[in-house]
Length: 415
Image: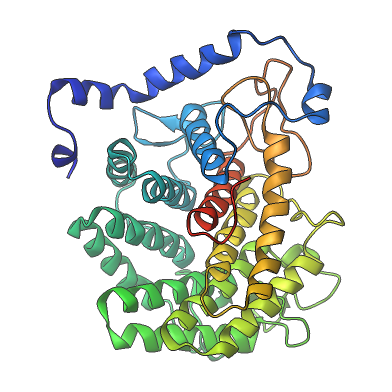
């Protein structure tokens, strides 16, 4: 695939050194005609746009920043943090980072970006012993979802075969403990949670739409029905985290005081699964349920300013990015009324504006913060003053790409 995209020695040399060239150009830009600003100045005003303002341009800038700060050219994966530490055991971080590269490839159709998709899949495979060598069913689901999208972008049959192999492993996670559901870990089969079931349902529905395999559709419906019965609050629509973590039948998150167990990405993947199934069945009730969970999220898991609450760094840094990705899927559903769609889009835009204002600083590339209401830890020259995990950066990039997709499809106007 790569050889078909680029031809000739010059193009190959340019591809090999693209990050170095881009880094040099963009690092030099702030040094021309820019005066030093304090961190207080960053918070008080928004720096001028370097291109015509749009969510597409912001997504492009965000993805470029991600590459300049986090991309590891030697291993063809992303560093774990902005200090260039690399832990290749963060399997699901890399899976979601691949999703970010696919987002950019879908948006810009650039041979450079598509080549990076191919490079990264090869890098992931070379940095771990096997795509299927992972005890966590949810981790394999994230990898399968991102590689499936890479297949749709590149039409590389190897990627589809990778997904099919992962899917066979994932289906083995279903058992009768707690009435069904996919387990979280191969070594704890009686613990079932939303992280392992919401993404699995999405994967099942997307595979059905691609291959037409009825068994995948029926299995996805079974997963979603179990999750709704066991892990969705019938009073509010909020999605609980899991059942059986401590060996009994306790449910994490079903008590109003247990906000810690009400994670944002569980809300997004459940709503996303409902929207995916709607695209197959046209059952309006699915979107009603998804909107109910969205409104519960907006009410219960957001700050008073309407910005999604922070969930820290590490794994938590990625949670709200996943949530906005699948709320974006919901917003694009053709079964929503204009008013319903606008409610979801307004929420995403409000978060996008806040995250963008706080991420930008006088030096490029820029960082996102885990709290989209607060500037990231940078000094007056835009240099990071402390470590920022890859997950935090990915959430910001996902938010910008989600809004760019909505803009490109005409659901929201240019800024």
